[in-house]
Each structure stands twice: as C-alpha cells, then as structure tokens.
Length: 165
Image (cartoon, rainbow, N blue to C red; front, side):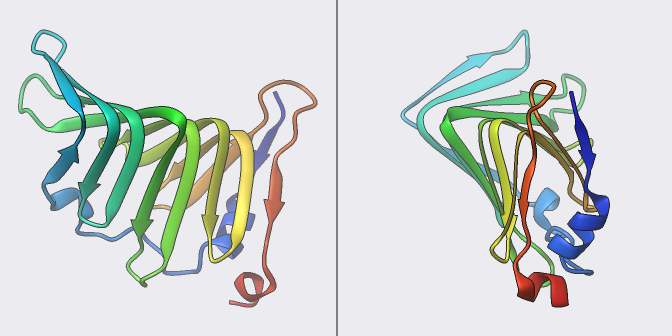
C-alpha cells in the first residue's frame, strides 16, 4: 500500500488557522432518521434511512449511522456512517467549510479524527484530495491519504488561491 504523507500539502490545502470549529464537541448531537435500533449491551444505536446527524457545525448524512457510546460515562466515542456516499461537513474557526465523502465514514470523537474509506474525498476551498482512505486529524490538521493496493494512487488538486494563502 503506497502511503502519501500530505502534511505539507494539507498545510497548503487548509489555511493556517483553519481549525475545526472549537465549540462543536461541546454541542448536543441531533439525529433524524427513518428508524433506529438500540443495543444496550453494546452501547450502540443504529439509525437507518436518510440519516442526518448534526452537532454544532458538523453535519453527517448517510443511509446508516451507528453511534457508539462509552459504557461508563455515556459519552459518544464514535460515529460510523455508511452509504453509497456518506458525507461529512464542518465549519472551521475561520468560517471555511471542510467537506468529505466516502462509502464509509468513521468519526472518532475521542481521537478527534475523521477516517473516510472507499472512494474517499476531502475538500476545502475547491482544493480536493481523493484516495481509497483518508485519515484527517481534525484539531492538528494532519492528513494521510493512501491507495487501496500497490499501484493505487492518491489524487490531489490544489487551486491557485489556496496555494497563495
């Protein structure tokens, strides 16, 4: 698997102070879906059918979302989204929108990390990174994108205005 460490590109891609909106994790989570299933033993709630999740400026849309909570304190540990294209968007403190999509999204609140798998794409300001898997450390703005197998490539498009900032 060929890895492309894109921290330098991410710095060009995401402007210097483009941290995720710092108040998001302190906000309640709102979820709207066609149905839901609760498994109290595994501390998971599964939401099905045109699921829309919102927490502060974070929006996740998917066909299926699984929310996993910590059994001790009830805090949300992880949000997994699945669909033909599950989407993630979040405002940054400087008012820009970070947008991602993939067939599988894993948003780990504990690690402050978004992992997108299978046809993954992350964009901001018309700059785009595509690969089979993209891991984005939200608060530190570190990004790793890679292909699925040897020979698979990661594609990046940096728009001139993003490079000049």
